Length: 173
Image (cartoon, rainbow, N blue to C red):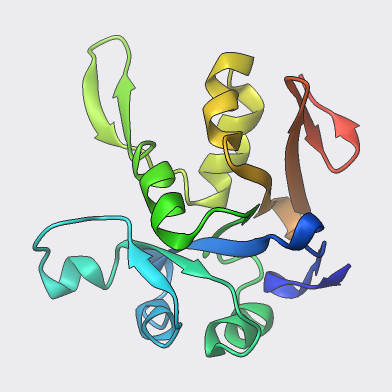
């Protein structure tokens, strides 16, 4: 285990993978500058976007303990819903493609398409637990584990084994 974002213990990536995070810059005005200082980053929104939107957009970053983001997240991010983390061997561009697929959701019963803010840990924790097995599976293609802060600073560590969703070692529905 190693100290992770939000001051919680984060497992070391098995098999030499890398930890990445999707940072929700809309949650704190400091986040866009901190993301900008990260070496490896891509905005999940594409195209020509105005600077004000870019400053509040979700950004995918490779987590590096030397980047200022890590220290600030550990000191000030607990309970602030700054984002979710994942452990993957995929490169940044492949993970970017992977996560962009999930940015839109069809809202029943009208079928309206809306932005799906899955990178907010409150949304992710609710969704991943309620999703049907066939809805969860695409989330774990190329991703070994997700880490998302829960209520009262707890850290959920989601894995999918044989179609079974686990939070740490605890099987979930």
